[in-house]
Image (cartoon, rainbow, N blue to C red; front, side, top):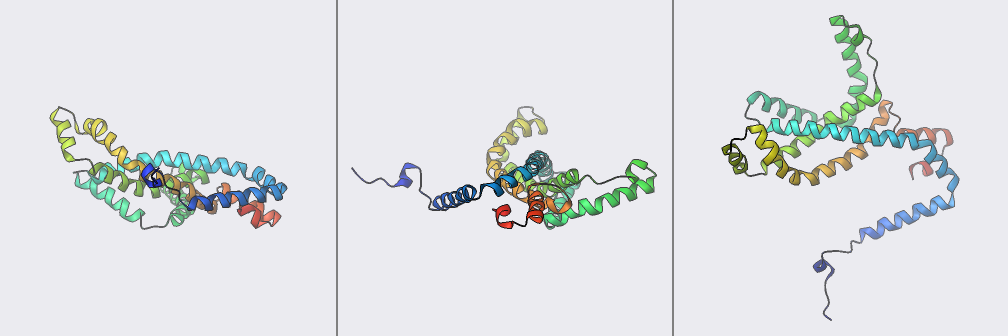
Length: 234
């Protein structure tokens, strides 16, 4: 029997998988060796896990819409729409996410209250920050800029003849974009969009600095009380 390379069969044994298995085995051994601390930690941070999941999913849905609108704006022939979309992308992508989250939590409420006082609108003048809502806004604004470029690239990857053919059949621009261009573009943008989702899930740990009791913050609270950083962060 002739030797058949694994790559020819459509798979490859990646040595990194052995590292993943080894790390997982060490974690399981630690849990079995010192079960009580880990069980206490899991119980303590379970609310934080729920908040992290909600933050990630809610933000991601809004990011998709923001990116789609921004992507359409970036290919728009309207100079004003194109300028606003481009300005948004260039400015937001140049500011660290942590700085944006802190601005939305600490500065935005002050701005809202100032507007309320200036316009004599009591509801705005007495506005109180909702940490979770402002964290979602910060994540959507930041990641929306990156998602805008993903959708722009995906739409522009579709040959312009597709749009021209749809328009020649009597479709409006929006109809052609919805029924012809976007379904094809989605196949192109799916991999980078998946990467953005993974990055978003990891970056939600930053909301712990703006009083959101997510997984990271709950872990810090447990560590501050019990002084066991190894168990908490492992």
